[in-house]
Length: 132
Image (cartoon, rainbow, N blue to C red; front, side, top):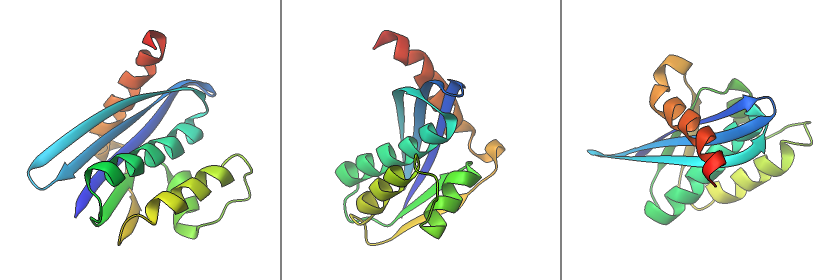
């Protein structure tokens, strides 16, 4: 099973944003820092999951993937597979499609203090927007 920790961050809400992804596969760990441009914090959280799903599709096809996020809003939307928010709906649809590439996709909310690695990567990604 692949453990995937994601976090999205924005400097301002909306503002320059980034995604941090930390993946554990057995004894190996992988880090990804992805600038996302100008988004709200919630949008950045969704995009972090989408980007992580894309990475997992390439690097860990056919694996069971277990995601962790400190965003209650995003985890609730994905677990319920429903949102009234028109901004989040296309993001949820993208997650639905990407998650079909895996035999099992789980997502679980974790407190911020347990998501420090992904948080640091997401904050680093914000500053990479200036270099793009």
